[in-house]
Amino acid sequence: MDKIPILKMGQYLLVTVQVDLYDRLALGLESDLVNMIRKHSSRGVLIDISAVNIVDSFMGRILGNIAQMSKILDAHTVVVGMQPAVAITLIELGLPMTGVHTALNVEKGMDLLREQLLAQEPLTPEEDDDYQ
Amino acid sequence: MTIISKETIAIRTEQDAVFLRHRVTEYCVKIRMGLVNQTKLLTAASELVRNMLRYAGGGVVLCEVVSQSVLMMGVRLTFTDKGPGIADIAAAMKDGFSTGKSLGLGLPGTKRLVSQFDIKSQLGKGTSVTILKWKNG
Image (cartoon, rainbow over all chains, first blue to last red; front, side, top):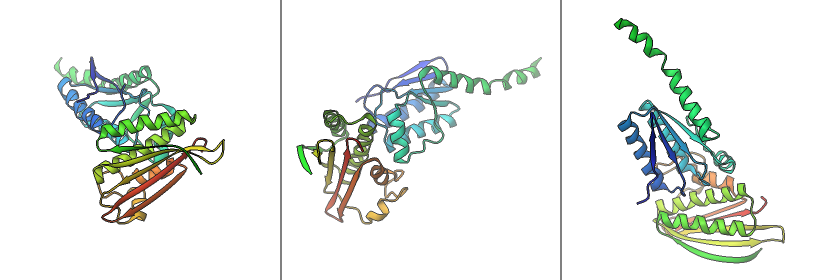
């Protein structure tokens, strides 16, 4: 069966969807990602959909699910590279994509993930002070 | 309205849906439909194919290239299944209504994406949905 590869890069997981998405493939990606986040204690997930030319209500919902699931596993998700035609279609279809962070390209998406991670970090050094 | 070409595609699995997408893309490219309209039509088709597979276990799609004048060309798709039919079409066409577990965006969303939308359903006999997207509309 087809599978979308997930790459681990440090604290992040990278996914580039290079094939036509269909329902079972999207569902497989959802469960694979959640398992990988747990296995590698990942803090961020970047999904590149620049090669995807259709996102319908089901696939849109899967993207939303992935964002929410990873959030409760303490990882941020950012979806990057959405084609303009796909964005137009999604909104006309009526899918709000709430809770899904997006960025224009992979570079900006990685910046966003790093910022989000940094924004959480500063708490740790203060806690360490107690040991001294 | 003149029908320029037609083809019937049987849908039984999700793979057939991917094949349908490719065929529809070819037709759109042939009549030089813009990318945004192509994406809208393909997304609408994707929603309707899912309905067919989920509620009726499959069906048949008739793909036609139609024209009203030299400038008015479009792609018309008719999705016919022998499923349980839809009891209340008016309700099914409302945003957020679903008898399954979906978001209930399929039918109303599809209607927003295409130029013409027609649905006929008979309980126990099946459902037929026709969508048409003009090249420039």
